[in-house]
Amino acid sequence: MAPRGIPEPVLIRGTGLLGTSIGLGLRSAGADVYLSDPSPSAQAVAVDIGAGRAFPGDLTASSAASAAVEAGSADGTTTGAETPPVPGVVVVAAPPDVAGHVVIDSLVRFPGAVVLDIASVKGAIRREVDAAVVGGHLTPAQAARYVGTHPMAGRERSGPVAARGALFTAAPWVVCAKGDTSAEAVSVAEEIARVLGATVHRMSAEDHDASVALISHLPQIAASLVSSRLQETPAQSLALSGNGLRDTTRIAASDPQLWVQILAANAPDILEILYGVREDLNRLIATMEEPTAPGARLDIAQLIAEGNAGHARIPGKHGAPPQAFAVVTVIVDDTPGQISAVLQDVGKAGVNVEDLRMDHSAGHEVGMLEISVLPGRKQDLTDALTAQGWKVV
Image 1: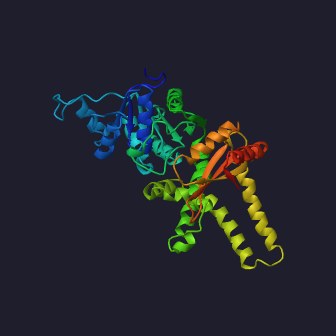
Image 2 (image 1 turned 90 degrees about the vertical axis):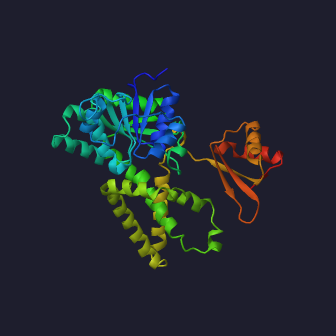
Image 3 (image 1 turned 60 degrees about the vertical axis):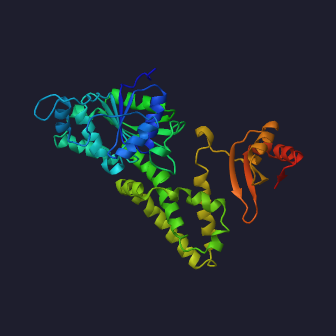
């Protein structure tokens, strides 16, 4: 049964990781989904894994030319080709640097469809749509059918082969409507997010871009800058690295082409933050150049304490206020079944696992399983695991 509140069929323009994942999720919910991508191979992969059917129309031609061809041939005769369906919703999952163009094309090409995009920067696309209205390429009524959205989900891997229908489960999905956005467009966008298991957040495009500049784009820049320092690092030095370095640099493995587009599109908001970071770095450099000068150690302590205070504001589990957990570290052999065996014994002890992470010991075939629990249950878990023969450190 098709999900209520989502006009069908749904056309997804772009079959990368996010577009294909949306197709998989909507198909599993019963929606009729069509797919289109400039890359025939990417589209074919998305179709093959069940994200939807290939859209039969030519979406590479101009909107006006395509409408004429879809109604018949160029000379007015009918064609034997399959008649393209009329989508009720168009999801633009194109790269950020072309998303605005695809949004405008979709608004013109499909006069009755709600059009939403899922690009990670919203202000630039909104400005393109507004400029199209001012320039006479769109009417205000057409522009009202557009709503910008941003599902805050992803993976280190890209492309349709990495897609997952459950990718958006419990993830924030930001809807950036304007005062003149139609109520139907907002409702449809929010319903798609809910059907895919996401949590809907409403923000203006300006607030969204300022927010992601800090909580998403700056971390990517920091991770990439730190990782770039490792290019000439001796292997014996890297052998000493642990979870601290891995955690800090994990997202540095992201797609360079995608991030060029994201950072360029949100440059003004990112720059404001980078100026502040530069001030902090200059302050730290000046202090470190004379670390024994009066007040130097206090300044270093203040910088670290400011980081502590910021980290403490990051929401905890399920969006709840941040909470400090105690860590129980268990040594496990690097053999199959060890982690599941530990977790079974944790369950027998009646202790809930609040978080879990794994580190590996350099030069030894053992791992260190770090189990985060409520502080009041740390000793209970330590005693229970020790009694089961586990080495707790």
